[in-house]
Image (cartoon, rainbow, N blue to C red; front, side, top):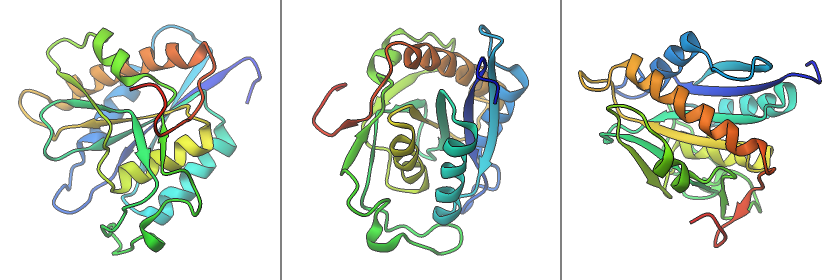
Length: 211
C-alpha cells in the first residue's frame, strides 16, 4: 500500500439462523455505494464475514496483516435491537453458542491467556453524544453479546491495538431500511476515523477509561 494513503475496513456478516438477509451486510453494502467523504487518500474496503468463528479468526488476521487499516469497523446484527448500538468493549470468554457450522471455540475463549476485556480506542459514549444521524437513535453498550460479533471485535481490538469498533444494527424495517442504515454508518465511521487519527488510541484493559 502507498505510504501516503491509508484505509478503513468495514465488515458485515452473512446469513445465520433465520436471518437469511443480514442487515449488517446490507448496511455495509449501502455504505460502499456512498463512500466516505473528506480525505481522498483514505480508501474504504468492505468485506463480508461468515458467522463462523474459525474463518473469522483467519480473516481478521489477514485484515490487519495485509491491509493495515487506520481503523476496522465491524458491523453486526442484533435481532432484538430497535436502534444502532455502539459497543465499547469486547470479552475474551463466554463463547458457548455454536456458529453456522456447529463449532464452538475451545474453552469458549478467543485467545488463551488474553486479557478478559479489551476496550476500544474509540470513545463510544462521547461519540454517541455528539453524533447526529437524522431519524436514527444511537445507543451505547459495554456488552456485545458473546457471539461471533463480539468474538470478531475482541480479535480485531487485540490485533489492531484498540483501532477497531463494533456497531450493532437492528433488522431491516420500514423505519430503518438499508439505505438509512448505510447513511448512519457513513456518519459514524467518519467520526470514528477522526477520533483515531489524533491522538493515537490504545487498547485498554477492563477497569480503565473510557467508561
